[in-house]
View (cartoon, rainbow, N blue to C red):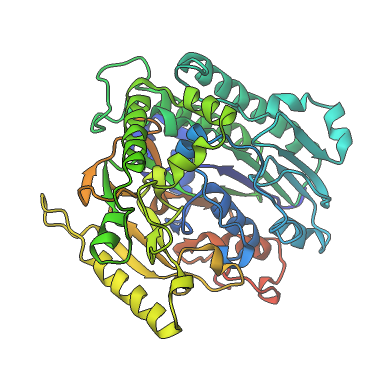
Length: 496
């Protein structure tokens, strides 16, 4: 048997949690000991769609075009109706490129892999919205009940799945993924075998507050405190089963797209900052808008406290106009406003965010750049009076972050706050306040906590830092394909 590459992609696997649970993760611990220590940097924003697209293509988001952020809080308040289009990556992935060189691939459940497309080998993809799993070639469905690989729809809480049912279904999904994956791994002498699990992204989003004793929403001793730990142990068992199938010359890669941690517990109201800088203007004497804003905050608070996000999701499906109320601050005068917090933040209140500028109101490029400079300087000066700590890690123009034809999908300014602080969009409010929506989906993506472990019996000299754009050229390099012939933003981490 020739050398194979076996890649296991685990969405949301976090290096800090691995360290915390390492005594109960014998297989992952064994892999870590055999792997070089590699620092991994995710993309901005560290959302699964954007990150996996960069992993597959070796391109930055402004070039591959998947600049799409939809986190679980928005999913719970806004009914998701369609899958993220994969037209941006189809034909450009490492398995598409490698297939043209005669390499055989088995690609199982890649994020963004639906609908499937023709590959040199096998590809299995599933919808994140509908109960549909596709296979190329389609006769694979005759060998296995692909329905068992469907994502789990719905969230734990009132009006949805019970917590116990949610846990059980994700355990069943993971077991079905393992069973099918092992069957496909043995089916052929693949050049590269890739299998993906979404479970470690989904479960921590909803169960973080039951696990983290420092979380303000932590309910005390509870029956769900070990759920996240147990799913890490289940993934360790999964990895063990694939690890045991490796031959001496095979290469194993275990990677994630981002890490996972606590959702910010404080909000920094960026729109209020912009209002104070005379760049954003409120409506005058709009009592109705003020009432709507108050009701919105009240319902978010109640939903957070009593796990009512499923009911909110169903209401927004029946009354789509409610969506605008929850995503657009009703008290802002949009006609005269020059700058506002973007859709990278809003009700999601994550630490990574952006500011959009209304260029319709700006006469020339010089004024536009002056406004951007003023906003960036103001962001960098934000501090918490309780601690005197500066709250913005970095802030920059979007083209300083990435270059590419899709850079316009990004806000004009991008920035990241300290982990405990998320971006709020309120005006006529304190600059810093408690995040009332924290408890709805208390887990959050962490861009700095992704993992990349690689073990090989060959003496491979590698760089010890990696961006997600480096994965595709590294894979091609391992397959013996000259990655330099392709216009990647990343580069192989192998030193040859």
